[in-house]
Length: 127
Image 1 (cartoon, rainbow, N blue to C red):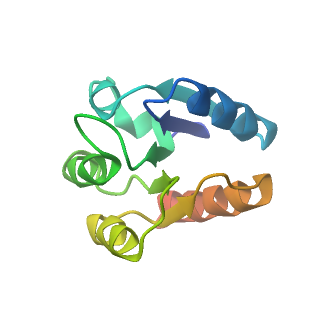
Image 2 (image 1 turned 90 degrees about the vertical axis):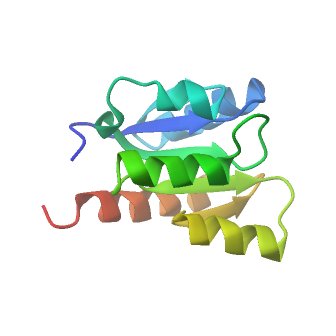
């Protein structure tokens, strides 16, 4: 279980992680930003995170591939995937990869708060 409420934010667009991290902090969480899935996967301890918020559409490794990789490394780490282009087949693939939520950008603080509460309850269950 994570010792803090640290949220990892992954997006190749440099402005998105900054904006989301500000929103995450306003909700009482801490945030660490990553500009690629590979950068997150090289983090020394994934157990530090309460959850991951990742864009789906990124070069090299996309958010769905990241979710699949994380399920092998840190099975109970919740992943919230976000996209600017919501398509039914994309959402199905995201949920099949293990994502707990798939959200369309932009989203509200209230929506993000609900997603983070869901992630927290999943991360802290059985404790």
